[in-house]
Length: 79
Image 1 (cartoon, rainbow, N blue to C red):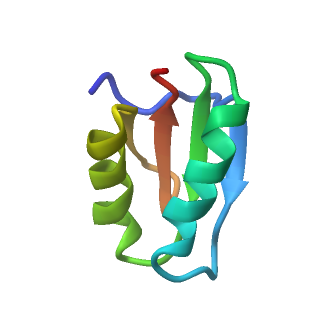
Image 2 (image 1 turned 60 degrees about the horizontal axis):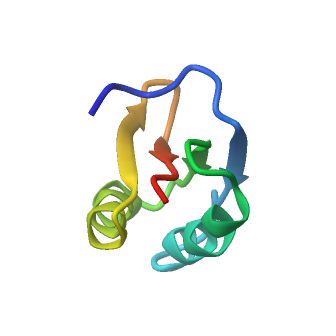
């Protein structure tokens, strides 16, 4: 992990959504973005801290890390 990108290409606001909705929304949005794009997922559901990295591992996407400014997780589209 190279650390969170300070300026994501897109922000996906999933605050107030419960598992598994943040991951489902990420899975729906990521294919529409170019390879290499970074999405910051805002998700205040505690399960997102585990679910988003696990989804990235299963789907071959790059989890960059949790963002220090709040419940946010950066994901880079790998392909």
